[in-house]
Image 1 (spheres, rainbow, N blue to C red):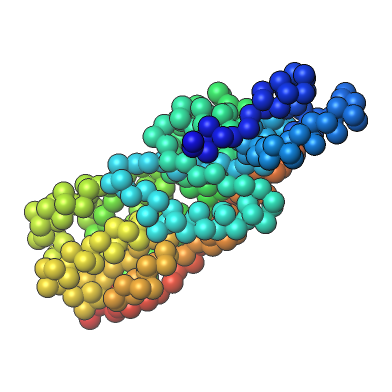
Image 2: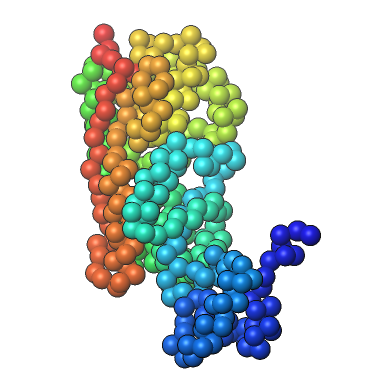
Length: 337
């Protein structure tokens, strides 16, 4: 006989004691104000005798506060089925896990394709709050208008954060710092690569243009899938060879470009300097180590959980919190002779 068949159910306890399942359920969940002490004693004694194991989900859903913080991540095609393997996502989850545990709450992680999935799953688990990573402005507006559970935007583009807390970073300044760095190193012609020209990437690219001015900047919109991207690079190899510096508004694409250049016999940074954005742990592990823009993930996670608490308590909160970033210079960039 399997464990599921052996498991004692609430209805079994209720039938044996001649009580309603609602009464037994209320005792299990601590709702005993309207139940006699004798009934509570009888129920608890039989539960112990039958070794009843309560279902965690049942307990959490029966409480006013489930203590569950949901972290929803956009299961975007660019991750090619490896969303949680992404270094930025993994690092963010690590910081969020620490803060959620420190606040005596539970973290539940879910990949999602759309806002409707978020609402369905969050409501099913009676979540206390939600942290959202990687969705777009229209998704946030939909959630705001169709869901009562408070949420913060941890990483994504949110133009109108009314009744939402958008915890962002100074993307423009980060791009500006990279552009200024290349200009100060003597680079005259640079290339920017990104899979889009909107939202967060747009802010980073605009900052780069401002910082690199008056140098010339080319731009390539690259495919998300790696095999298609490398084929694209090969077709545009003349454009790549014609610059001395490359900026990618994500470390993943910067490191991927380094690997491509290495296969083509193009040296980094001797031939082309490269810089990324986010300063994921891999930046320190690649060769040469990647110059990148650092954001403080620990502070971002702490603020996310603090602001969720304030939203639940209906306290006034700032709609947007913009955190500073800093340039971390490593050996993937050098002075252009």
